[in-house]
Length: 247
Image 1 (cartoon, rainbow, N blue to C red):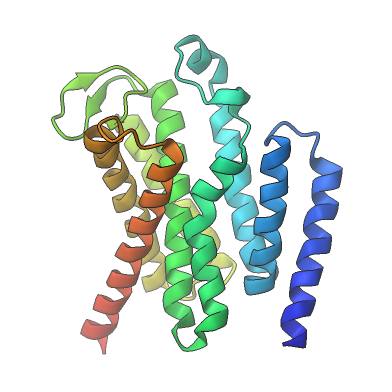
Image 2 (cartoon, rainbow, N blue to C red; image 1 turned 90 degrees about the horizontal axis):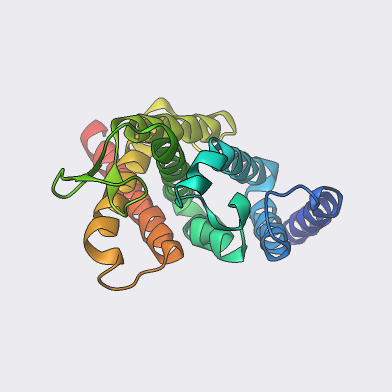
């Protein structure tokens, strides 16, 4: 218990010291930075520096890819609000699922591997979504509604492009690789499960966007939470199936 308290204290000191130094960088709003500090503190306490670093990498690459072609996307009216800076709603909409699984590793250690798989898949899905959305909106030549393959305008909810889909594949693989290198997940089979789950959840998110988002007035943050949850469910189910057939 003492070790756990020390880990959370260390995480708090590191996160808020770094935020104090780097908060002038226009990656987040003030509320976004505070939320990131809280998130980072809890992740450090649950997963030590590896879990913290995995999410820092996600936030960094997610923010950077948002800046690609930002002027063009702004002219088209499809750019992220606030110049691409993340607010608290963005932080928690993207990270709530992963945070849940991180905390669960502390309460249910025998199932830690399963919870780590769920954690990794949630962020693989989110980076895949960000890569696909931002690259697709800038470089996608043709955009199609995923449910009907009808051609639609860039930025349409549920719209996908070849370029954006390939970017989603890259984003999911990249995030799964980071999770593997940081030992959040530990085997090649886990890597495959996380990468595939992240991509499938991203495609599922497009279906939700096309069929339900406007109909039920779902916010982007709610859809993000649904997407990351779907990714975690896919990954855990995939792990269970793999374990059943291999063993």
